Length: 376
Image (cartoon, rainbow, N blue to C red; front, top):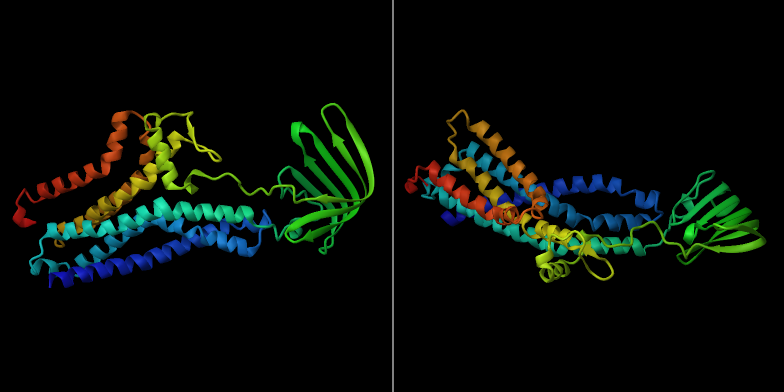
């Protein structure tokens, strides 16, 4: 019988979590998708590139929201059980409150492992895949982003201005400014031209103009009747460098292990192509590995709902307190990594703080029962 009761509780928690996480993640994904529209409107990528890139951000969104969604799930389900007197089913079947709390704690281990798997493997992989996909994608909307009488900076070190653009690639009054090395510049003026596309590469076919090269010492002009100006040699403004949150966890762990004694160094870097400060790597590993452990603490905080008496008129205020306490723990867990690079004593406190808080929680439970274990 007890197994059936706990199975029903598990089903309610898991089903509510799935529905709420789907709803909240979808809302955040849509809002973030609006902010990502500059991939099309400013960087010139295709709609399909934008959609696939935004899809690859879902694991990151879900991972960020998991700890809050799980806390919200427990808070709502346990409050509902308590308000509808469904919680009495547990007590009348001889289930002790400490057993109930321990069950909630064990159930939270499932979500802890999910969070760890997402943080350590899925999220870095999906973020790196998304950025590489965006970086290697062609600028399908490039022609449409060249507007009349407006300076366009779609490519690095290149400014384009046209007087007229008929939409078919035919241009008039063309101005192109290319920024070269050593503060040198190249300016191209043409009376007319055409934007050509071959495969995924673009180029200008220019007529009746001149090329002006400007250096720190001199400048010279060169006229032309017809010339081809290749755009494939220019890089898009899409970021090329990998960020720390897109980096493989195993690589970060190896970097930290090999340089653990210098983990707080502000200068030492690790990596070949993309290098990162050891200090930043230490903080990133803390966020990926230690932060998820607060899921257990939040589950225990939520379970305190069952310790209050429904007859007590202060019970509703107790729930409000517990909700804001849980919300405060979530905020605290997100900021904890900032303290690990301070003094060594503070560093160890924050590393082992989840275990300390779990120990304090059970001490509080025993004190509340006046150390009468029969009441639990």
